[in-house]
Length: 607
Image (cartoon, rainbow, N blue to C red):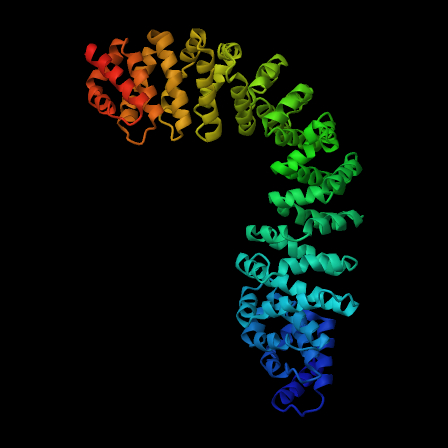
């Protein structure tokens, strides 16, 4: 400790008189103390007042400068020293040193600034104000071609400094992107791929910057896809592959980059990882399998990349993904089902897949999970079936294959995501399929569950889909039996509420279903219509100028339909409907104005 005190005394003299000898040995003494016990030595130096002496010692002409910068770098490894370094005025002279041509000065200065910026808002802000990042970015650009080991070490330090400077700070990351660091770093990755430390630093940088949406366009204009795939192919260690995966995932959210990654051969790499890890029991195998299969699914979210891999249903990638569905591995089953859902995003693909027997594979998978009950797999398989059911030609084929029966097995599920997909799948299946709609609509258990879910206020999606399916069962079956089942289970009030939805499509579906209820069994529905204030709801819809033409039209159809009921007729008279309807005769939509005339006649005749 005496040595330290003595060294500090000498430095005090040196900072006021540049001719004083012994500066070098004093700095060596400080570095030695820091190497022995960094935290304790840093604390002592701070207490003894070393920091205010350092700015004058950071002289570009002095041979001691690299050691002074090194001391700052070592002290700034401690969190408690970083804001003190800023307060002592060290940033400006350090940034000045970035203009040096001496490699050792640049190296130690880069380390010092990087450590001061690490997790320190004050440090980053000071470097930002002094313009340090711009100078470092220019250095990286000008040094990028040089593969000399010392130069690569400097590049690694500079890249690290920029990372510490911008980490978790969107504003500073955006600043680096605007400086054009992304193309420079991509070049570095290509030129220095043999240098592990520099490569890792580039990957960390990409991982940080790729989270920012504004970075994606710049990345897409480089050959990042090729470089990352090339680097991935070389890796044998799990940690290195994980690092690359962490960059690929945010980048692959961009559709242009998705296609670039597919063209660069990433899919083949991913399939290889899946093949190597599918039977592995080590934690790292399980992690890699999940990451690789998730990334595969992500690539299929882009329309072009998905279509390229589908290859008319004959693509080897598509075939491999299909083989995941019967797998015993839940992660692969999940990825396989999600991949099918992604392939099923246009009618051509859906028709081809249904014709080649994919539905059976999905049904077998779902059957395995009625008991096993893996919710994510259930959700994914139902998503795939829902998408496959969209083309009209597929509906009857899928119904014949028993899709509705298997889907109904999940009616008891208490998991909202599964409930949501189950409802969507059934709704898609019965669209235009009268027989199936009647069969499902007279299934007491289903209708009862739908009415229950229509009250699931905590899960808006489930509530909305339940209402829509309830309406669809009536609309597509046009069956008195279905209408009776819905009335008996208490579904009418939910359809009346659905008519007030903020979504026009749901309003319309509700009004058409209510119109059919009124036409097919007004007597049985009368009490529920009164209880749910149907007439009042229709009055509001017709009075509201924002209501779409089809809403006004279907509301008037419904008014005419309920006039056969005495209590409803009385409600219509008491609300002076005739005033609202007569105004609609002048409506710009011809269908609305025509129906208004007919409705007015009906109201006048029965008043």
